[in-house]
Image 1 (cartoon, rainbow, N blue to C red):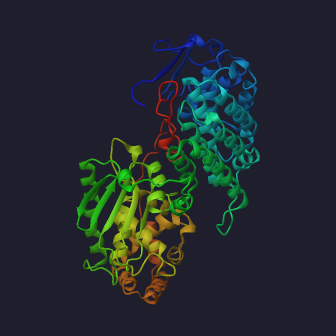
Image 2 (image 1 turned 90 degrees about the horizontal axis):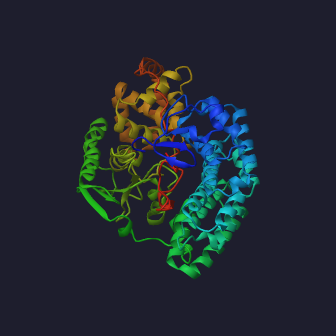
Image 3 (image 1 turned 180 degrees about the vertical axis):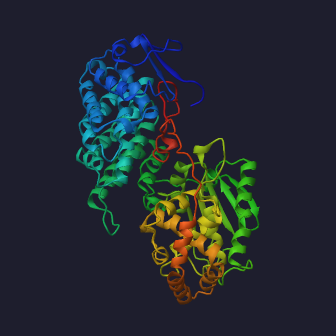
Amino acid sequence: MKGKLLLLFCGTFWLTACSHQGLTHQHLTAPDQHQIKLAPDSQLYSRTNFQQATAALADTLAPEKLLTYLRAYSYFGNPEQLTAADYRQLAAALQKLSHSRLFRDSPGSQEQLAVVSYRFFADKERGDDLAPLLPILINQLRQVAQQESSLAGDYALWETLRAFGLLLNEARKQPDSSLAKVLLQAKVDQALLDFAASTESLRQGEDWPLMNAYWALGQYRLLLPSDPEGKATTEELQLDAAVAQIATADVAKRGDAARDAYTLGYHVNRFGGRQACLDNASLCRIPDQQTVLPQRHNCSPRLYVLAQELSQEEFELSCQRLISQEGDFHDLLTTAHSPTANDGNDSLQVVAFKNWSQYNAYGQLLFDISTDNGGMYIEGTPSKPGNQASFFAFRQWWIAPEFAVWNLNHEYVHYLDGRYVKYGDFGHFPDKLVWWSEGLAEYISKGADNAEAETLASDMANKAPSLAEIFATRYSDGLERTYKWSYLAIRFLAEQQPQALVQLSQWLKRDYFGGYEELLAQIATEQQEAFTLWLGALRPQTEEEAPVSYPRKQNRYAYRDYLRPAHLIQDEQHFHY
């Protein structure tokens, strides 16, 4: 947030000038002397002040102001200094506060309680603390929805829906956690379904409440226990049917607007995909590709970019970054720029969405790709006439005003690897290709500048996987093995055994997996000691420990940009990071 944003508690109004007073116990009973600064302040956001604010919640005449302080603390305080007892105290205070008529009659307080709930309790270890708050949020959803529409009420409704969605989104990543357990036990899906089916889910003719409820329900579906064989479970099918019943009634009234709400709210956020949308065309709608991706820029005869909204300068910079590393690839593997046999992928299509939310939605609907990731390269079937290799990505919107497309150079190496080295399509070779594909992409795109991998090698000097283990890496072995250790193995060969690296590429190009596998075994046996010594000689640059970065931001993939109501702006009272 730009500028100095201060929340100054003077009387009952948000004013712009007031002398700063520390948030001590004596001041907690005098709201006219509170000042909340939306900036790091170790004195203001101390554990002592957190505890005193929590303790004062039940007795204050201005709960909204104390809740706003706690909301600000979640961004500018240090949660590592809080104990389990502090979280329990906060949960108990919120529970007690919820019985106050002063709280129930204050949409502003309800908004802040919802935000405090997901900011402090969206954690795998906080499920037991969250449990007593879930009935409060469920009752709050019903109450706020039934109130006459107002700006304050809209903020409260939106944040209450967001609380469910963000809690569920975190829980689905940790399905065995206490957080997941209490959300399932509380049956929050029923409260969300009841709301979505009610007339209150459309507010003054707008469907943002319904879409946010759909999104939260999509997160709930992802949290449900899944079938080990990937089949839809009874619970998943029942939820789909319940949502479909609501959407069917809505479509009967609002037509395509209702289809779009269902599609972008529920379907894409449970990762339903293109084919399932086509099969459910009465409810799900696929947009026109030209409308979503109106821009096209040719980098070269072999490379073009489709985009939502890039400037000419950004197009040219992206092309430059891609083309500049081609020479490094061809030089390293001595490809002579000669493609593999039967490979018709003579061009690459790069699809650049403006952020992950758009990638998640339209990557599925237009291209039928999995979008629960940070981008994807699809080689297709290279020998098939008309096949189009494609890389799907999105801009790094979180670094604005700087510009970059996330994973652009890494994914482009996958295209070069498939075009000039590996015979056949992605699944052509039976195994032992993960380390090659991901390690090569990391090495070509980063070169010797990979401090994270070097630090890992240094920290794990006595526990490093062997070359044989790295060569056998599968994607299920985790990010460190898949990317960092694979990078280190490729870099070792590039620096110490470049001819072996070239020969491996030649066996893959000739479709001789036996030769590739035999050489891997030889390298694993003969070069293990050299690899160990090489790892030990890496000296990552030692840097002073970086200071804590403030504000402590929400996971940037947690929410969807198109779900935010346009009239609910971010300001000094309604702030997100």
